[in-house]
Length: 423
Image 1 (spheres, one colour):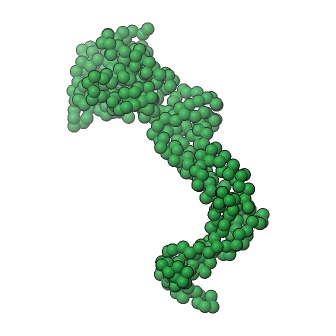
Image 2 (cartoon, one colour; image 1 turned 135 degrees about the vertical axis):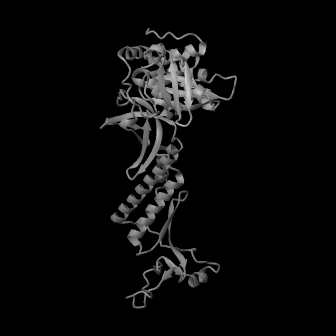
Image 3 (tube, helix red, strand yellow; image 1 turned 180 degrees about the horizontal axis):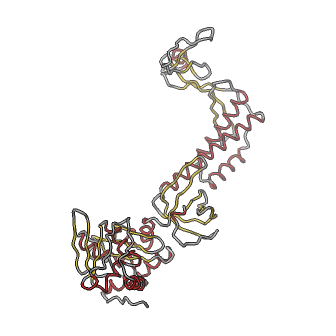
C-alpha cells in the first residue's frame, strides 16, 4: 500500500507552490505508476492504466484494449512473414492482441460493444518495482508536472497579455533585462527599454506584457517599457475615467524617454477628458511621468474634425492658418515667426509627434520675414532633419522645449497665457 499521508502532503505542497490543479497531479502520479508497471511486468504494445484510491491508499492496474474490425486494422499471414496486403496507401495499423480486440470477441463480453470502445481487463497488483522501472516512473511524473505547470502559467499570464505586470529585476545580460515573476521569467529586449534608464538587480519594475512566448525551455514573457499601450494602461491605473472607458485615449505618439502626445475624448459633455488625465494640480500625469523616468507628456483633446485635431496636436504652438489636402493627406500649417520654432520643436520633435498622432503629413511655414524658413514635410514615422532652420530658430526651440509639458496642460485648462520663457 502507498504511504497515503506522505502522498497527500506532497500533492498539497505541489498544488500550493506550483499552482497545479489537484486532479492533474493525481493523473501525473497514476501515469508514472502505469509506466513503471509496464516497464517491469508489461508486454510490448500493452496499454496499462493505473488508478489511485487516496482514501484507501491502494493502486489498481488495468489493461486497456480497443475494439476494432478490418476497417481499422490489417492482419499478418499466419506464418507472420508478410502482411495480407502490400498496398502502400493502406494506412491501417497491424492487429496487436495486446491492445486490440476484435468486435466479435468484444461482444461476447459486452453485447452492445461497438468499434472504438474500450474493454478493460484487471491486472495483478504489484508493489515491487525495480530500479529501472522506478526511474521511468520518476521521469514520467516530472514530465507531467512540468507540462501541468506550463499549462497553469499559460492560463495565468495569457489573460494578462496586453496589460501591465510587475516583478523584480533578476539580472541584466547582453543588453537584455530579465525580470522574475515568481513562476515565470520576463525579458525586456534592448529595443523595448527606455533610453537612458538604468536597471539594478532586485529593484521592482513594471512593464507592458505584449507577448507570452512558449518554447521547449519554458514560458517567456516579453515585456516592453516603450510600447505606446504602456502609457495607456498607466493612465488607466491613475484615472478612473480612463479605466471605466468614459474617457477614451484615441491616439498615442511616443518617443520613449523624451516626449509623448496623447489624444483623449469623451462623449460625456460634463467631463473634461484632458483634466481627467492631468488630475488636480497635475498629480495624475506627474505619476505617469515619474514611472517613465520624467518623460514629458502632452495631453490634447481629440476632435473628429481633422483641421481642429491637427491644430491641437501642435500644442503648445498656436496655429495661424491651416490648409488640408485630402488627396495627399497633407496639412499645410502657417504660424507667426515667434511660433515657428515652437511648432517645429527641438530637432523637429513636436511636429514629428503631431504627424504620428494625427496620421497627417504636416508642413509648417512661417509668415512674413521668416516665410522662407519652413519645416519640411513630416509623415508620421519618417522624419527628415530640418536643415533649413537657422541657428536662432534652433536655439529658440531648445529653450521653449524646456517648458514642462505639465505646465502647458495646466495653462490650457485654466485658459491662462503660457509663458514660453525658460524659467
